[in-house]
Length: 186
Image (tube, rainbow, N blue to C red; front, side, top):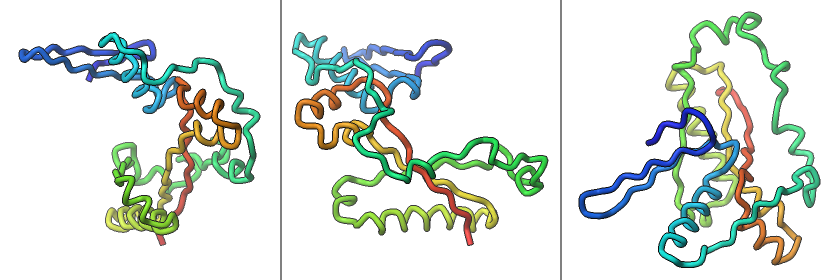
């Protein structure tokens, strides 16, 4: 992978002996999400083949402060840093937990499996996996957070008509948010 020292995008192009080309990119997730990057790469590939872009990009800013509807779940999504205990005030935090012991797991579940499985079963499986990890690692009193990425393009264009949905489908920029919940293993 290319190294991204400064800026928001690093691209590395590798030419193979057979004549093929491998393009790798590294980008700042605060600027673009995976969907936007895929949209950019697909359009770029089409343009290099003298084809029109598959989706015309939409660069205009969105007004996320006025969503089509608001739910109270947003109030429980984030916690101010000032509400978190510091390692000095809580001996449990600093004792045997360091940055090396933090685990980040990503699960790949095929779309057809998700369609067949009710939502409550999916979340139960994710929580069971997280709780098993905490129990197996001996960290039974620690909190585990699970984050689920949500594509805001669909949410922001919901009920706004076909034209707005087309514009949001071509939106370049970060429109992914993560819904998360924390729980301790018991």
